[in-house]
Amino acid sequence: MEINIEKVKAAYKIADESGMKILHMLVPNLEEIIPVEDRIKTFTDAYNVLGRSHPLVENFANLEYYDENLFAFVRLRIICAALNEGWIAKPEDNGGYYPGFKFFTSEEVKGMGNEVMYDLHFLEPKFDTKYVAVDCTFTSSLTSENCLLLKTPELAKYCGKRFIGLWMDYLLPIKNDEVI
Image (cartoon, rainbow, N blue to C red; front, side, top):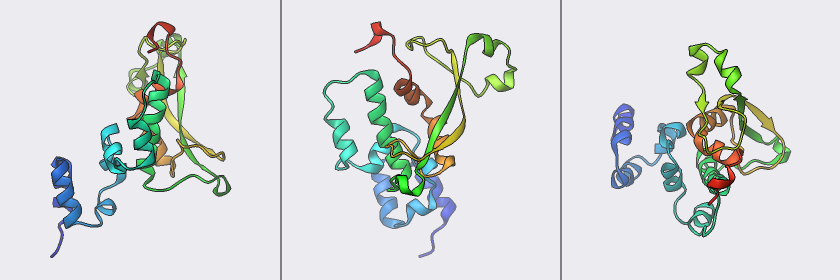
């Protein structure tokens, strides 16, 4: 049976959970056909890719008490693990890549053109910071072991942009009156 890759990609975009199971049965190398950035667009996608028996998913499911930063961190661990497709950072291999963020004050934002402001993520008032906007413009290579490292600069940038709200929840302090 010959597989039409474009039809597989189209079916993937509209498939529900049972449709995904069928696609995986019909196309065993589905992960090679559909790029990881197309397969993981939400936390739920990452959660489902890893599966309920994955240790990170089990840890997430057993969280009883958390604050916003911890909750975001645990969710980002699941997302990064799913995006890495089994790759794990090793310090001796020169580590991996981490999304880089550049923060801007309201004065800096006022001096920007509209084309630059289009790429900015404006921060919610829940954060206790002097910055009002952030951009994911670069990645940096790290050599230390970290569970949020990604295997390529492209994945790091994708993860930073796609999940920027979670990254901000993880990185920025929440105002004291908003802590759970």
